[in-house]
Amino acid sequence: MDSIFEARDFIEEIVSRYETLIKAAVRFFLALLSLSVVNSRLGYMERLDSMTVVFAVSLLCALMPPGMIVFFSALFIILHCYALSLEAAIVVLAVFLLMFLLYFRFTPKDTMAVLLTPLSFVFGVPHIMPIIYGLKGSPLSGLSVGFGVAAYYTVDFIADADKIVESMKDATTVERFRTLLDGVIKNDEMTAYIIAFALTVVIVSIIRRLPIPHAWTIAIAAGVVTDIISLMMLSVRLDVDISVGGLLLGAIVATAIAFLFKLFTFSVDYAKTERVQFEDDGYYYYVKAVPKIRSHSSRIKRTRDKDEEYRSSVNAADSFSDR
Amino acid sequence: MKNGIDGDSVMLMTRMASFEMNEGKEAIRICNSFRSDYVCLNVVRAIVSATVAYFLIMALYVYYNIDRLLQDIYTMDLMATGRKLVTAYVIFAGAFGIIAYVVYSFRYDWAKKHLNDYNYALRELLHMREGQDIKTHG
Image (cartoon, rainbow over all chains, first blue to last red; front, side, top):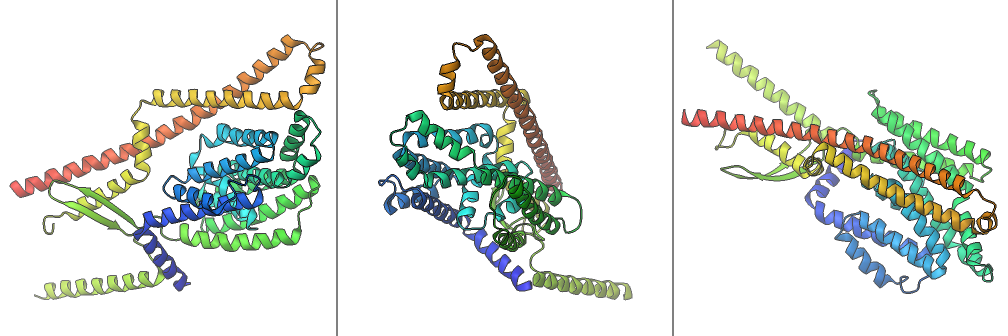
């Protein structure tokens, strides 16, 4: 366990030293991943489906705020939909616009949920998202994760919609629009995941804030149980085929990742190492503020140091009183 | 006091600089306006957003049901439908306005509290400096 804490301290140290560079690199790779996934799933517009374009946009995203990755991913999705059919582009644009107007305009910090939740579905670990957002966000983050689920299922439906559009060549624009909108909205599997994930976020978030010992551990356990039970109940209620084996496996993976996340984010030290600069009349200060409680081994070392300090002070006091 | 640098004031200044770097940016931006101005402006923005969203939903609904609506348009009670739509809009936009009022009032209070703490730290720093000056110059 101690080696894990030391590894965490080492990573924290590296991250705080090269923070700007690492953040830019993370933004670049996240954009690269997201745009590549969009291109591989949709890929209707040939001009966008090229590594050069993806690379150039990812580089741009590395230099801009994280919200721009969401913006460019949404733009790519809409342009691919437009190449498929105008009706698909209108449906997807309307879904994204409603998400922005009704919710993300108020909570811009949660916008990344719309990007990360679909990516977690693509990588087969969707159950981790409600736990992580419950731990780091507020109960309202349930809506953000819910919108992320909606974004994933929208893209998932559009990815296979070329056959529908092809089969409806002779149909009117309104009929095509109606079929595509039905496909996006009337999806019971999506509804089941939205309700289950939103409920999980709320429960994890509430328990995590309770003033009880091991609140985070209990929150993770309660979240995983809520996720499994609610999805099973909803799958029966809405007649959706959700694999129980896959669900349990996903829950185990989610638990492992959640504990790793807790270790790096919520474990003992709340504050990360910070570098600040300021000045007064006489000096310029370049201060590195390090959280007081570090790994277990350094705590032991500090306790020993303090013991020695105490012993030497007692000895000094004794020798003073002997005089 | 060592080499002219006071440890306590450095700690205080570090905490203040950390605040300025992180949540302080948002708090300072929010508290640049009066409470009523900040909350009203954001409520108006929320109502504009709700209006656009409402018309978007209506447009989607009309386009989706265009065949049925064209058939029923001559038998429909247009006044009653219009009243229903206006009532729905008022409820929708009103709910959004109320939510925005609560959210942005809460945000302003949060920012104000943090800035008060920051100002308190600033005054404490000033007292420390004055104490140092008295010690140095007598």
